[in-house]
Length: 128
Image (cartoon, rainbow, N blue to C red):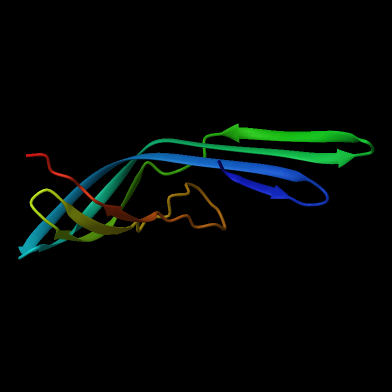
């Protein structure tokens, strides 16, 4: 898991993890077998963690640099969420949704801007 950067000078492994609780508020409208949703999604940060590990060969030996800790992510992200679903039969449907976070989730001063975006494809089964 994470990113591995391997070149002739060094090997670096980078891991970043952010855990959120999502709180959606949406309006949905049915049109026959189709259903549309539009709303707002709030993401509340539960945890964030980062780790970097680098090995560098140096004069016949290997130097190791390691760092880990909190990523410095803001506690709340919010943005629009839209979705469509199609009912295949009485027990099965397919849903597609898209979220676009409008906050820069990286806290503090930085040249980087981190934004949260995701697309979900769900195939729910209803047991009756």
